[in-house]
Image 1 (cartoon, rainbow, N blue to C red):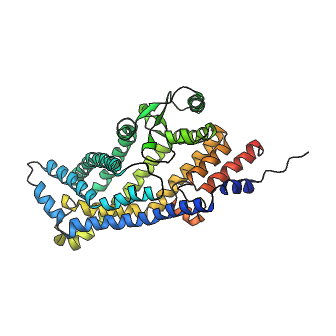
Image 2 (tube, rainbow, N blue to C red; image 1 turned 45 degrees about the vertical axis):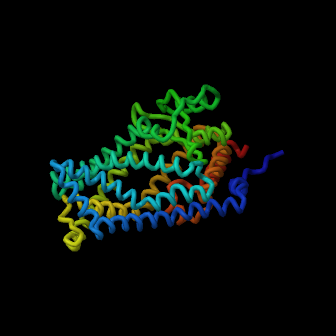
Image 3 (cartoon, rainbow, N blue to C red; image 1 turned 90 degrees about the horizontal axis):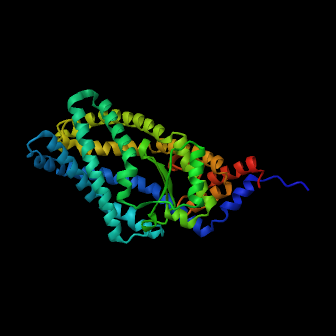
Length: 394
């Protein structure tokens, strides 16, 4: 008897309907709230800049740091203190976004003290690397003059490359404990898939994300000798071996398809355009409001809050572009993972688990503007289409 043709849309709908109306409403509300948080984050950033410039905090801070004997010390001290004070001013929004809201939707496992400790560690990393970046940028402004934005672009890109390279080894372990995955079918399956696709990994690590969150995640991070294949303990505990294989096939795809280098090249272009726009806008605003704000020009470190505000605006406006690029890479990795792991049902099941906190069926325009990953529907449909073409729907 002839088998009925596999119906991709019906199979997709079967998976989507495993999410109850209450679960769908909850995940939609959480994800859509993130749209507004992007806007409020920008408004808050502009408000922080207003406090520094309009209320004279920047002028006061510059006067204090100018007591240091060397120019680089003055710039570095201002940058470090600015980052600290900006974090203090932004703390209410951080508490709501990172703690209150996560608990409202049942996604966080952290008590407030533990969350605060994590937040302070993140702030310390930001202050250390951020102040060094600011120091390097003002060095470029002083030496390169009108072409500072070209050198500034190169400096930001270099910092990004270093961050990607050292992150898995020095930064990530500050927040989680990484342990080699014990020998067994899961580990051997991942390493076999890595070897088959030319990924130079001889170990797989898992990390204790469950102390922080209920989310599932995995990654292939680093550059060169720092490349690390990692998955979190939520993934191991909540998912079947087929689902784990599907996730890791996707993550290996990012490495094989050179997504990290491609994103770094895109970052170079985006930062270059952003610096050029900021250079023009900064000059216009300082010409008009500089005396009122106490900012003499681009080389005046007291103008750092204005630079930060302008970059916040540029980043906000560029969000649909960056989301589209990242989402395109994610779709490529999805297809790679389906071919590498050959687990379409495992992949569809994972897409449904991720839809616990990601809107599963957005409008096409909504997905283009706000989604940096394919929606649950897009992913399940891709998995079912792959299943129909490669396995005949079996």
